[in-house]
Length: 551
Image (tube, helix red, strand yellow):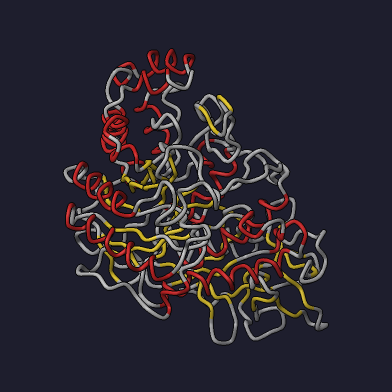
């Protein structure tokens, strides 16, 4: 994760009750059912041993900083943290590790207690003794294994991510860890370390993948060495543990995989390669704050597809292994970005890993106990930092489509990124509202640009300016043809009888209405998020209320 400045932003929606915030997390047996190992790939999808789609809905858990112990263990027992991850709906952890943990014998065998003592973290030792006494006097590598084991005991898959060589916060272009040949990045030592880590966890069934290296970067980066060493690293991992997925990062802080459009990897193994990319608001500076959100979203997404997203069309899985936002309040840059991110993540049904579970760090950039405002948990690792955020991502924690998931015929859902909810109907005469996407009935989008409720003759119709939309039967009339407009392609618009163009929106009663389209271009002070909707492909079965009636 690149260093970043912190801003704050205000979420526009209230915190929901636990049953609303965790619609899937309350069903852990369903969400975290044991998948048939090992995982492999089928075109752009990750699948289990039966060929069924497995969506990686991960959270990052840092273990690569100076102490080389998974963060938070001085605040909570490891099993408690693992259970919190499950309760929040995640099925996977991207667990980071520094190369020197396995290539420097004096570090690998260093007792946890001494690792904290050598940098003066005496208070953290007391916390460890209270919360995780079994790891205080074991070696660092044994403590790392204990975290993996706890996650496995709770049904959580693990992607082992070689985040950095020399333990510490990541990343900058000149930290000596960026690219092959840098001060702390000897490629031969790196390959040796990958092989050791792959061997160490060969029998850990919940370790389903290994990410070769986080955020390659810096003045030495080049495509020729990327192919040379990334292929060698991949082969070393596969030889040591042929069961795991091998995850390849790109250049320029993991934003650039474009060179793969001209030349693909040359590997001795198949159906194990996954590519990863990172996408934050600050990846584009303050563009989201300073520009029109529709135009910025369109431009940034076009760039994402050109630099990495094209791999999906080529039949490769793409794992957004880092994304996230400041969860405090008023960060306009993050807020605008995240609405766009959720729309894209839903449309492409991406695998992903959120940064981060950490509520705080033992030591980061010289600050003891630094609060992590991107962290899902609060400073003490007890409660969610922002429960409404979990509501927004809950729909994307389960697969929408993919091999073996044809639980219903292909259809559409109408997703609202700002809330993480979908357009639902109660009856023919009641306004359409936003609700849990798990309750969404299937929609269809016709060549005539009508949004039809599948299995019926009813279509989505605008009734007038600032009026609730409804279901109607005369689907060739004005107000029945909908198409995405604006650079973001997330304004759904139609024309009324008087030829006025209106867009879908949401009113204060959570009703879906048609109103004047806003913020289409130029204005950088305007927020279009309430009008952003994505018509998303799905084969996931819905659980509609059987009491619903068209009358």
